Length: 306
Image (cartoon, rainbow, N blue to C red; front, side, top):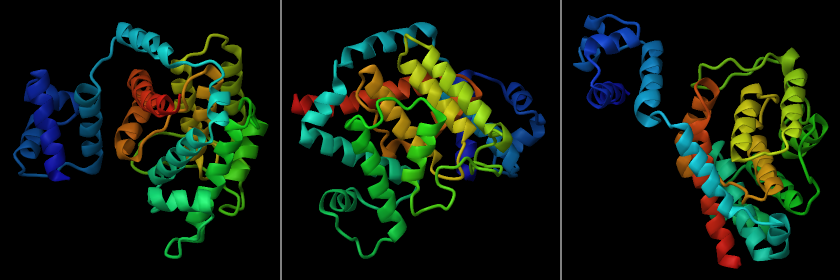
């Protein structure tokens, strides 16, 4: 940890040509304190480390993305749109199976599942029991994959109502939580993030606003999918399962707009969390770019079968 924040401080100074005095001012600390941290003579408190990480992400990891770059990316992404993409995936069983496997494995792995991709495949397609794995992890796989299959089979032609989202959450968390399908009545927190989530009493109203905004927009793009995902995860309406549910909604929205369903790889979990937090606190451009690049990988899977 110590080496990490020292490295981040040095990169900020080297990349931005910011002086130590200016950096200390940005971090709201004294020059002497900053100098001791950089030289390893003292260690900043956790709050200071968090501020260093945020500044590093803002200045180094996700430098300013201009409007023109995003416009160009969104325009380029239109090339991977396909008419009747849901029908294409549904009509080709091998293609559907590959997307379901990749989506289920990666989404659960992001949330900490210990299932390997091979384990996931065995449970989904051979109904195997992985003896060394918990019953909970088996349910996470079967519940998730079945919902995704139903999305491809048009059981959910659109997910644009609180009733529909609660129904999907009930299925997603069936056997895992007693409050499956019900909005949380408690305050929720996301470990490691200093973000205030929606107060429980405001969840229904904020969810209704979110869906109203989605349905009102008649010219949706990947930008709207990214913004919806960011807002949904900030509302964080349920006690658990919000990340997986959010990614299922995003898959449905991609299909609705004619795009390949984005598969966020577990290997990019850290970057995914970073761009999501950045969208919730700064702007959504890095998240849009991330989603487009991940979506292009799903398009490569599609091309194998077309």
